[in-house]
Image (cartoon, rainbow, N blue to C red; front, side, top):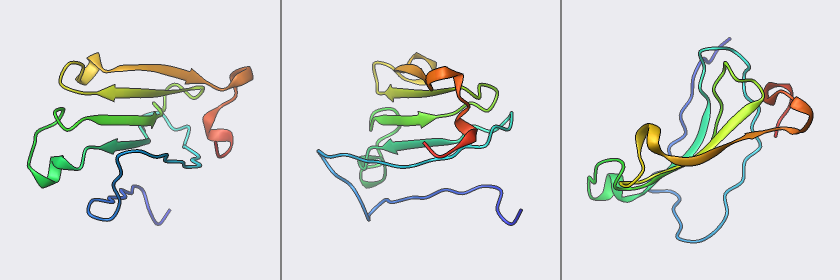
Length: 102
């Protein structure tokens, strides 16, 4: 395998107030990995505001030991760390997220 990890950072290239973000993602079913698709407030870099004051939206996090479940979570000053506000999602029929792009 030529690559084992990646990070795409769009700071200074893409930000919005209203809109929609879409992605088709296929994850690895390997235990120990934690692939995620998330957004962080732009003022984290602009004003040096510490997390979680900038806000964070975890659109999709996949814990490798749970092949049938992903999580979406909102982090902010009132609910951060393990106390984030969110919910799990499972594919119909117990399908595995590593089987295809979703």
